[in-house]
Image 1: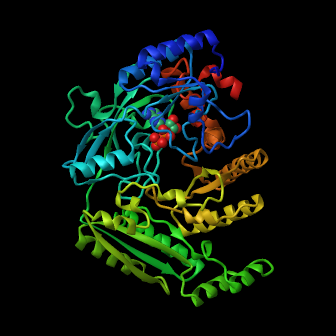
Image 2 (image 1 turned 45 degrees about the vertical axis):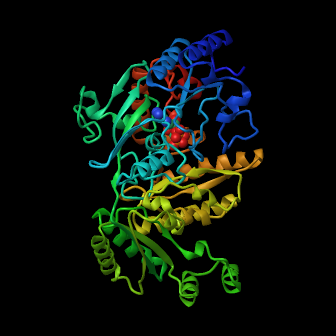
Image 3 (image 1 turned 120 degrees about the horizontal axis):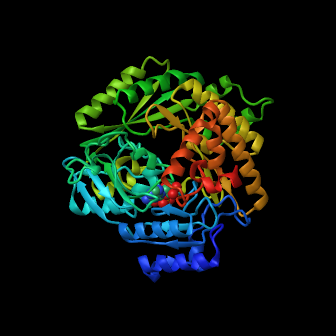
Length: 529
Ligand code: ADP
């Protein structure tokens, strides 16, 4: 039997018995065969002893059972690692950060408690996936959209608390959260926001409640187990329209992004858009191959000329518009007017979709997630070139200057690592969050210990390199949480020290998700410092 660190086998057996008494024997998993299912499918530690493998998993069905599990964990000092559906691939999946932790699997708690299409919100439990909520809304004919994460099989709670992003106007998932129910490390149940007011009528309408606003401390956090969460939904819009903007020169990126930032910050464009260049996808012909083979590489003018000759812009963005048909047409017209000051800019009108759409139209969307329909098509990305990946995901300013600088810095780094940068600009820079860009780059995982070791070192180097330029990760795989937190070091790491103070006060036995985001409970801190 695998054991949690520092726990005797007698204590662990006693704890397992208590877990069984709380949830029933069928829902406590201790055999290697069962527990292996909770290993990270994209682990950067494949075939290495360092891989953090859980000791057991326990799957409650109700909040009282979660409370009982937490009380047992306190009694025997057993680390728990909470997952909702554990589909966090590229950031750790269902595996804990600390080997030997017991996975607290909440996917059986999958009740949709309310969907309101008058005030546009939902109240859900952790096991509710985007597919579940989408089907529920469709079956009931409700006029609201969800905002799915790219793969729709994950949960609303898991994704929001990890601060994932989507594509519609509700794309900043944590920003859409309104009210939580949380089991604290003591085992007590707390409701945040207006939920603290017994019989509140606005738990899902007003976020802040009274006094210090604590809901956000349960995101990327080891301070509580979220058992219910309110989330704002988007009223089904009348129409969705896209318009593409192409600019001919490399440096046109600067006015292009300035215009885009203006449109986004004034809520004229309210969905995710990403900047891309055909140079990242073009299948090179003889001419491009020859240019690339030039000593020192092609000049900017060479590339601009090549693209012009092939009728392509150097950069393009596709702007999404959501709302009444007349409004989205007017917004696109305004966007064109705003960007027309860029010399040589061209525009291409996209198709206008009206809602509700006919299901036969869904396959016509390159990415249905942009219109609130969950999908798994994102697994086509990368073309199966690696067996898995971990996401490097820095946030950079929404300016052309910053994107060009980031392009240069990361291109040089990846060239040094012997990796291509193509996928980076395939998945970003993207405006999943307001006012900034998210750049996503997948570092490959293989069944090759030496390669994974090297990639882990490269990953840590690129985290530090980004930090030197003032760019920090918004989220990271469990293997790199310590390294990322190290970079958030203002004033002698006061942020981490503050987190540790809170952690020790709220979770004195250090049972919840030890090590999450580089925050260790007191009893484990020395060993890891
Ligand atoms: P998803 O359901 O979207 O796949 P995961 O279950 O993989 O999400 O969890 C994503 C991250 O959020 C993990 O770091 C996990 O520890 C944390 N998390 C997931 N569910 C909860 C919850 N109910 N309460 C607190 N943290 C959670």
